[in-house]
Amino acid sequence: MADKDIEVEIKVPLEKEAFFNLKVKLREICKFEKASQQSDAYFSPAHRDFVEPEFPFEWLSIRKRAGKTILNYKHFHPENVEVTTHCDEFEAVIENPEQLEKIFSSLNFKKLVTVEKERETYLFNDEFEVALDEVNDLGYFIEVEALKDFGGVEETRRRLLEFAGKLGIDASKIDKRGYPYLLMEKKGLLK
Image 1 (cartoon, rainbow, N blue to C red):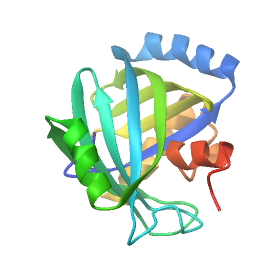
Image 2 (cartoon, helix red, strand yellow):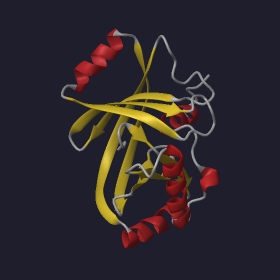
Image 3 (cartoon, helix red, strand yellow):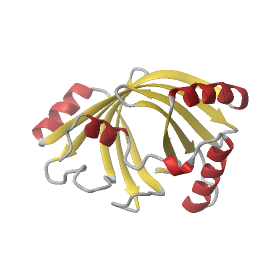
Image 4 (cartoon, rainbow, N blue to C red):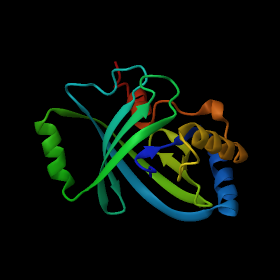
């Protein structure tokens, strides 16, 4: 969920034990929002290969969430660097995902990979959304996302990292490429 189309979040891989310990902690300090199964199919246009840069900075996906289908585009900043600070995020609800996939195919968009995950979502003081993800073929992750602007991207990121630290999250382990890249890498689909 982006604030004014700008998303500030971190994603960190976890060991199974740490994942379940965090689940207990989150239930004590946060409001449990929901559990869901999510499926995200990622695409890349023929004219601009999103996975060509060493550090991909764009993703286009068709997301399936609780009976809704959403077209999602993310553009990370700064571009093509190991550590990004935020991303532009644009979404639109799609009534007919099968037709959208046909349009993508007709326009020569290549389907890269589909990320399947089970997610538990928690809210902390309407300031942060915390998601615990069990991702098929990748393992356990935590995502922490700012739900509001704390005074610009830098201050929002500082506050997010401070909150993550209070949860015991090691910021040095932040994932820098995202689920689709990690899954493509694991499946040997990258050049």
